[in-house]
Length: 577
Image 1 (cartoon, rainbow, N blue to C red):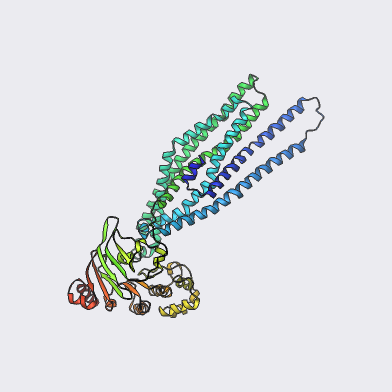
Image 2: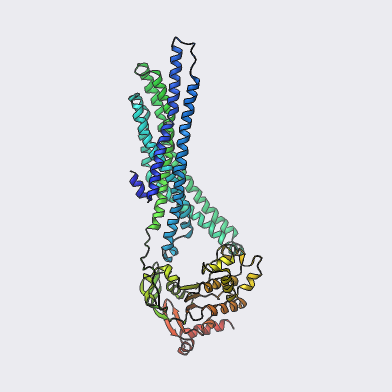
């Protein structure tokens, strides 16, 4: 049975050992809870013997009874302590490793996976769902198996006292289990629906917080308030249904267990009247009926938690079912030209690129231009290996990047995106991301080349200034220049630029453009430009339209063609008049 748990929860050997250890100590703890019954029975029997004996002047050994009671308390305390320190704490440590394992697996997945999955859901799986499994492994599963083992041992032991009373005490347990078992499918169904509504409510709140500026700007506060309220109401209703169903099942099972006490009194009274048992045996079973069902009640709760944990395991398995693409490790690239060869790519069922073929030559600048949605940004992401083409291939230096290790490949790239992502850390460390071994002096030099040094020097703590979540304390132009400084310090031979000046004012655009000129010198460059004036000097311009390449050449050649590119140039010139 434990092998099923090991396979279902994907336990490591250490986790499996800890769970077995937890079951052992839980069983001992449950058995130790019956020791007070034995002590009480022994004391009562001694008292009755003392009263019925002729030596009434002899004192009862109170000290002996107190000593026995203290021994029982000590045994129960030690067992509980060992169970906690030797099992729970180590399982919590293993749970941290499980989170790291999931995060490491996610790191190896292609970006196409993240494009189709809710990032908030992935965060919930790593943090909340893993905590649920952690609780199941540390408490619930040991409790279930430990209670089962201890119940069997106690059943056998009490059968030697009186088999009929033992049956009267235990007959309700399998019936109570059966009630919980037949509700299994419905409990899983409710748990899945509850997780779905919880995620929906979380997403709604997160989206509202992220868009708070837009909501206020357009006066949509009331609309979003109603939307959040409706979503939370649905979540609350689902939570009530889930808890009501679980509570009903548990209450039914616990009521059935109470019948065991009634049956012990009924059967015991008959046996006592027929002189088939003595009073002490009857008292033992009465005391036992008050204690034997305590771990069983806890077990009923644990069973519902196991059913909920199964849902969490399935959610984690849904990630691990994703295929990690095989690659060649540590590939060395001698040449650095980038070749697209009959590349096709689609998001789900929507074609984005169709039969795209071009080459970005080593040491040259290649620009990708086209109207919005034409596929140029997708082509740039494909060039970086973020996505794999559905058809055709992309080669760097003659090597198909689909077969290369993505980490090794990206060592050759410096990438500057339009939307800059910065960490809630110092400016120094954000720039150093490009090269973790860079000295402070090298970071400052890179900042100077990226035209960052001046504004950084004006900050309260200079390079040690914390810039807030995603650099919220900086302007768009300042963030963009920091990302360029990061690329400069990496000093990779291939540079990818994605419309880095499209949202900047003239002053910031000039500063960023100067920095770009420094970073791209003697590199293999692919640049996407919104402002066509900035790419006139590129060695090659690839023109996209509706996912296809319609023209290719330098600026002068494309203007002479009087085709799609010239129309784009003329349209943009008219816009800026």
